[in-house]
Length: 358
Image 1 (tube, rainbow, N blue to C red):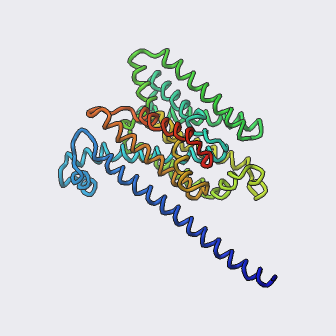
Image 2 (cartoon, one colour):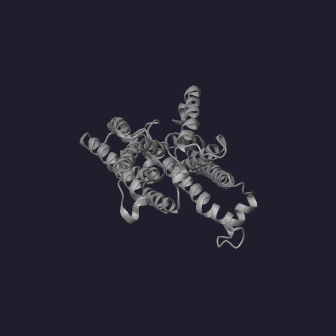
Image 3 (cartoon, rainbow, N blue to C red):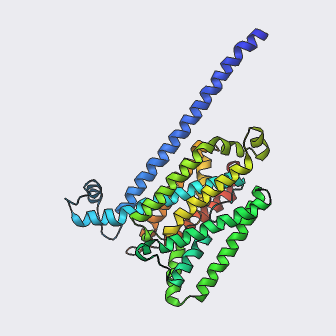
């Protein structure tokens, strides 16, 4: 009897290993399919615009960067559409990954960079810069983004400082984030109340969020911050997966919960500030994208984080396409479109009670 059990154990272990490998491969396949869908959506985004370029014009312009073909098509694709699409991909990926990280460390399905006040803080910084005419001289293109980045970082420091005094627990961080959201939203409303009609129009346009501000500078800066954030989070993937089991279980597995929470929170602040400083306030992506990824690949952070980034990029590009199609000849601010897409999805989650994925 004992001999039979000893024989069955390795066989059972092999079966479990095969099942796990099969599940992991299937999830990798889902992630790869999502990546390919987003790549096709990005090409579609570059095809849509008032210049009526066809797919051959766009592909030829992408390949022929020196402009030996149609110079006008090369200028439109390389100087306008490609930076806008790449910035949309980067911003969506940054917000998607930031949202997934935030929901993981706080154990809260409603946590996101937007709901914890980072985006509102960036909006306040941009509003102040626009109202006061703040300029960096030769680097004036960075004036508003730098102001937005500074106040978003200030919001992160404020939340961290409040949480630090109370032991960095998830509940305190959420409450501190909500208080920060209301604080910066109120200050932003005060700035808008004080602004002249012309300045107010400019502030509101920034706050709505738009890819029209995107250029190669935003691609380089936001892209570098996204790569840096991903590199910084790589060593903590298994600790984050363990943290989803709860603080006590994660600690029993050797995870230092408070330092991990502090480190990840700082990375989320960096990703969010880098994303919204150039394109304005973008809501719902950081909230919705992690839920989509979680439904597809579960809680394994090795796949959840990349797929959250892919889902965020996909939502952003989908919103970009919709913003061009809603009013041909004009572009609806993308921040409005992402909210329109995100709210029905949240309603669907609530009505279907998919708590298994929360």
